Image (cartoon, rainbow, N blue to C red; front, side, top):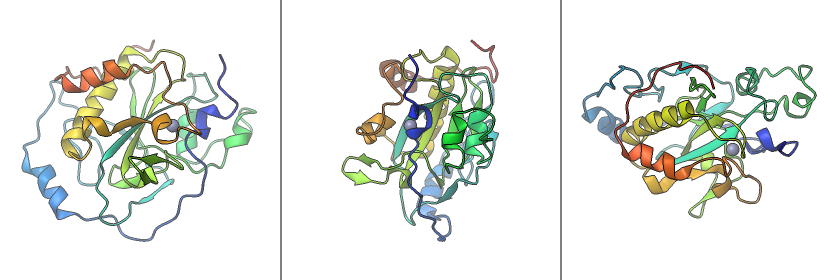
Length: 241
Ligand SMILES: [Zn+2]
């Protein structure tokens, strides 16, 4: 079933983010905690740590212009799971990359005319083959949640990390995606202990009137089991589905 015309990216939220000129938060306590433990390498030696700016080792860095500073003093204590595909239901191109880098060509597809110019981003994107791209370092605010609320607190972009899975609400996500998501999440939880298992939510849960992603095809039980287990490091680029 084709998604609603705007389903693929509307979930990102289109309200204008409020530019902030404040410098990135410098929280010595958080940094001290982050570095208090030794860096533990996975078997493959990748994704072993997150640096002070919040770049995940091993992810392809694609700095997005669509980001800004979090409000000063904000603890990062929510993880939001999304899905996206461009055009909707098509996993063949690099259009999500173009969208998050604010360079989507509106002439490339009729659908893109509707969304080109949206200033949106996510911290991480996991493509169908498990390829991992990072657009915004975790210490910065990505623009993925839009109008949203978690546990009575609004503007979830302020205090959350957003991960996009390439996909749709109703098509199964790939083995490679579940493996990569588990691996990323374990690193994020270790670095940001305010994100407990209860503070991992789908976009639909924080914007229930507007959003449906990651949708019924996302296996929450599998995901939650996977982050409790000490998983194997996964191949950087397994064959695509
Ligand atoms: Zn979403």
